[in-house]
Length: 163
Image 1 (tube, rainbow, N blue to C red):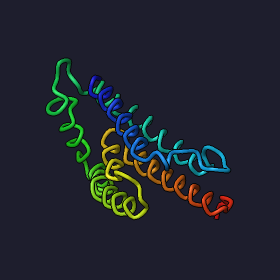
Image 2 (spheres, one colour):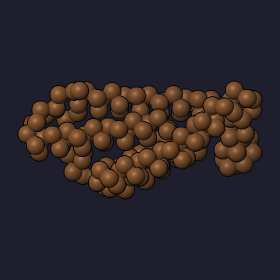
Image 3 (cartoon, rainbow, N blue to C red):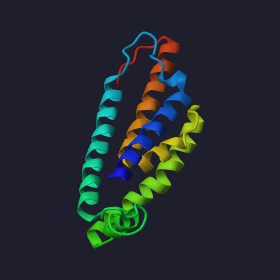
Image 4 (spheres, rainbow, N blue to C red):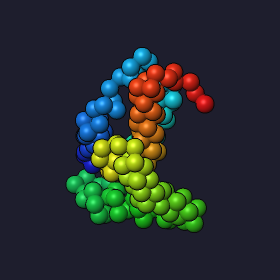
């Protein structure tokens, strides 16, 4: 259980690091609400993915971990978690897809797109996925992009009308 708490704390720390690295993006956009409807939807989806992930991770640890066990190798560890993700063809299909999305596409996209948009330290979205969830990292990134877009609209004097 300690490993789940450590993951939670590290996830919050990385999220705080992203926010602190991008204070202008996280400032309230001028002339509009603190959050757009899209930002709220993205944050709800992201937080729900964390809650579901931690629920299932807690079940895994409770079922497989042994008291005093190693969180890296052995029963209830990361190594066992990964092995069980490839325990059968259906699980392996989902696991390989998730691995490619999380470990290759998420960092490629957020780093490339984030630098293009002027988001500072966009690689942290990938780091956040290691402690939260891949879905949260994407939702958080897309919410940041939405918020940045709202700032740009406010600067240009445009209303934020959804397309």
